[in-house]
Image (cartoon, rainbow, N blue to C red; front, side, top):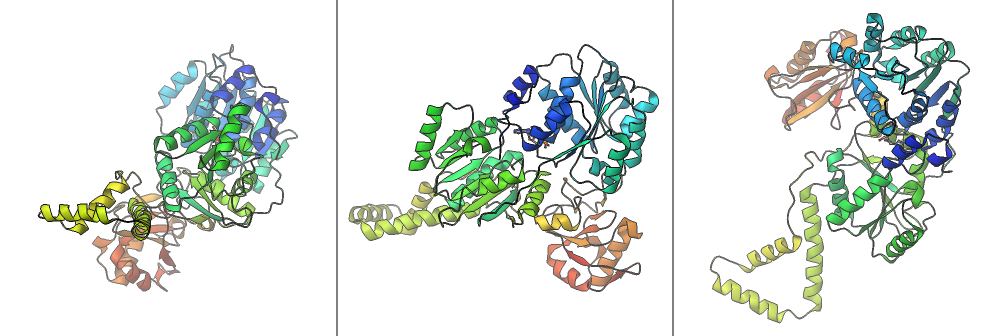
Amino acid sequence: METVKFDELQLDERILRAVTEMGFEAASPIQAQAIPVQLEGRDVVGQAQTGTGKTAAFGIPLLQKIDPHSKKLQAIALCPTRELAIQVAEEIRKLAKFMHGIKVLPIYGGQDITRQIRGLKEGTQIVIGTPGRVMDHMRRKTIRCDHIHTVIMDEADEMLNMGFLEDMETILSQLPEERQTVMFSATMPAEIQNIAKRFQREPVTVKVVKKELTVPKVTQYYYEVKPKTKVEAMCRLLDMYAPSLSIAFCNTKRQVDELVQDLQGRGYFAEGLHGDLKQMQRDRVMNSFRSGTTEILVATDVAARGIDVDNVEAVFNYDIPQDDEYYVHRIGRTGRAGKEGIAFSFVVGREVYKLRDIQRYCKTKIIPQAIPSLDDITAIKAEKIMEQVMDLIRDTDLTKMVALIEQTVLTEEECTSLDVAAALLKLSMGEENEDIIESSRPARSLDDLDRYGRDSGGRGKGGRSGRDGRGSRYGRDGREDREDMARLFVNIGKNQNIRPGDVLGAVAGESGISGKLVGSIDMYDNYTFVEVPREYAGAVLKAMKDVKIKGKNVHVEKANGKGR
Ligand code: AMP
């Protein structure tokens, strides 16, 4: 695992400053490969998934080519969704923070077009857009192509999945011949290879070549979390498992500092390790960790290299690593010297796909789990205190204390010695926090993500069907999302000429429950989710065995996780 620093990549000094400010310690593997090739002006096919640092991989060399003095449109990046377009625009803006006069504009369907036109007229050099809206502007001539020298297709396979193939071809065929064409895609289906063949000139393919790695025997769990609740989730796991030494990995120096602050603020013995520390500080942190004074070492991948500590009991992937290989290195920090180790990974939103790829590549099992609830933590804390209490009872003379309690119980009328014990337990457990993690359901199984494709519900509510990126939700009678409803998966959908009414009819008709009790029905191209009262779920599943809907055999099963 060789580290390439950004200052080895011959980058504009202003970009280097931005990268430092963003807290990046080193180039990610895909960046180390893609940036030099793209800087040479070559066409690139980059095979990389979200979370690998791909946006900066194409964004940095792109910025280096933009002439801020010209107010003409010079580059277009195409993205499959508005969310991604916004995200990419934000990342490029951050990278361009110290380059004055560069304007980046995201444009996508659903947003007021006149506002976009105004933005385009104000001298935008880089447009990040979804194909449909970009074509619309090209037709209106509010996007002029004559000065475009770079085009980027981000998540090309996703654009294909969403039915944008023709739009991509139309856009590419209208751009100037003299241009650089860069394509990033997680997978390389035939249609995407064909686009590369037709629209690129001798493209260089960059991908991270995977080595055969031995995955250490470490129990691996993962949790789906929201950014806001990550720290809380980590603290609960620390409380629950109480590892004596653990390492938490973050992707940026900034995140290391933030996490250390958060953990220290909550009373944990945590210290950070990253490239900005002087050797003396590093030594101090490492000595403190080795001696056990520091219980949690928070580090970047680069800084953690070469650390040789044997008795690390847990590894936290606070950020999902940018490269599969890092994952293996990280979790290998625990479970050494014949001891058992445990690894916890947190995923936010689409990072779950990155983790799925990691699981696939490492041929390992990363088990979905629910974040321990506050009740779980309370029970664990109480158990620990009670253990100490029992030790005290066994090993010390408590005569004086017994006398004091006796006195209290005798003088206070409505108070038993049990009440006193309970109150003392509460006191020693400290304040109870407000529960900010609303759902403690287990994360989805990474295998199930494969089964129904990428779109089986990973992006907020619902997967997608067709180009609008949404399934159809038939909310019924305000029943949606109630905790007392169970979500069932039915393996047919719109493409089989099924309507929500058909599913409703079948569920009610076969199980005998009233149609009014059936909750929302989310119908996608090839499958449908239907909510039924939890107490009837078993009966409905039983009744729906061997049932046909509109003459088609269907299979119904319990949907798992939030999306399914
Ligand atoms: P992407 O794969 O482009 O979606 O990037 C995923 C995340 O990694 C984004 O939050 C980036 O800001 C971040 N990132 C990109 N490059 C690096 C790097 N070299 N070091 C640390 N984080 C990075």
